[in-house]
Figure 1: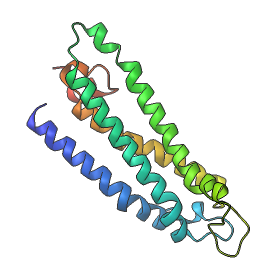
Figure 2 (figure 1 turned 60 degrees about the vertical axis):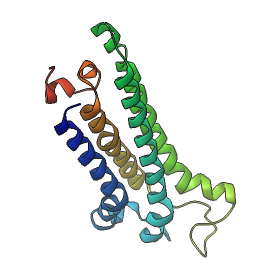
Figure 3 (figure 1 turned 90 degrees about the vertical axis):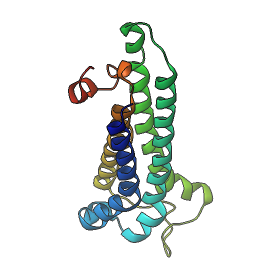
Figure 4 (figure 1 turned 180 degrees about the vertical axis):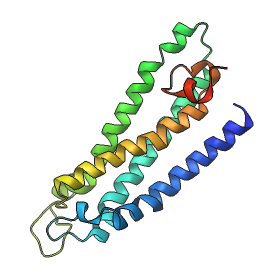
Length: 178
């Protein structure tokens, strides 16, 4: 990898870190508060104990997938473009699994954690889940897709060696083939 790619990769990871830990909550609080609030739900409480922990665990999964991708591609020595292109289904599988993992993280911290423990996340109610409306779920699931783009696609685009530029969607278009 060239020095400018290292700088861009580092900046991308730092941007993802700031986005997950600060920016995303700000967006939820200031731009979409009405979509996430259900009956009896305080948005600050949900962001603190529901959404934020889910996205933090999801961020760790994305960083892990990125490190695995970098390790595999940097250590591989394909002898033909056909061998290189065989990695494309692996990239797509990783992206799809990360998306599903993000959705499962949201489900765990919003619903399942509370049902397993038998407690209510909202004081004074019998709900053993956060009552996020359907529009809020769609928004959260969309943010998981956005996060996969920001935390996995963009870093793999920047970190993939030249031989694997054919694998990451859009890499040849954005960075060129050579």
